[in-house]
Length: 451
Image 1 (cartoon, rainbow, N blue to C red):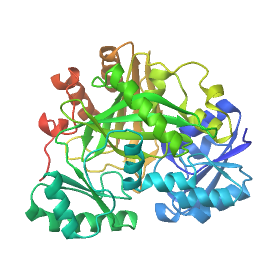
Image 2: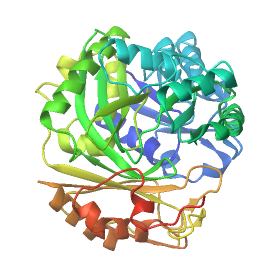
Image 3: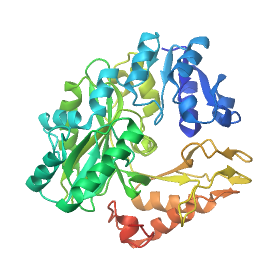
Image 4: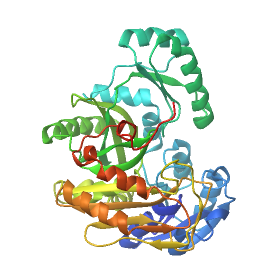
């Protein structure tokens, strides 16, 4: 087992990794920007090293600075968390050449899964259902026009190296193609330094379903069920739950078996998530692989009892899944997660600032993952996540009741948060009935959407 792990991240996920390391008796090294000097992850890690100024490009995304911190602290492994460098194959490669274990998939696997058209081909060969679309990168406008006519409008243009909803455009008619393709390419090039695009048939108002994967370094793969992530605003998830009310045991077993085949074939190790769209007939279609731990991993932990972050560390240390998952994975009860963001609940404008009052909820079935504290600052330089509030119950009704109770008791003063919006969502009859899709917020009138 590792002696010391450097955490190449910040905020609540850095604290989450610290907790897992403490459980395993592993020392930790926090890295931080000047804006995060007083953050909790710097306090609770065994060591803390400043790696640069506030801007992430000169701190959390600065590979030489992160590697230097690992070397001077004598860390023997690096956990990237999510975001930042977590799916950067070059960073994983530099870790390996520097004698550091990267707690995640192998660099070549990250590269292949990061190129979405390659991931599509692998999944299709393993029998995972995929949407009709391009076989590879779109070479030119004429090819895009011909393919769209072939598979039928509307279609979705997607950045091959993308994520987070950037580099994506819906094209409903041939007249829109040239303009939308140019827009998507420009946005993708600015966000990912790669303007390559591919195309998929658009599923109108789908559910967003994802499956949790664990693979070890010995060729073993386990699927830990699915999560429902349909409550979104502009492709950004707000509420997640497990299991999905739309996935039957038979469909879960079918998709899980095909994913085992695919992930064994590509030699996948560590944690990963496979994202799907579900159409209104209940059919699932693969969209992408996230080769890292997800923000919403706690809901899977709550219903399976499996500590995914500890599992990541143990897998990276060479342990087989048989020693980590000592019993068959079963789904127990229901879990819901609300992402509490520092933003106005009506206008969604960011609300960074100092927290002048804070009460974290508790009680049976309630978990809070956060790096927030009284008098702490939510800086304007990073994502707006304040906390992840997770509840668990014997069924969805109890998990929802506990979430309502916890949201009522969650007090954050000094900044705006999304808590009022979460309460409105949970109270809506369609949420209570499990009638979810990615257009939920606009369809129900809970928010307006600018055209």
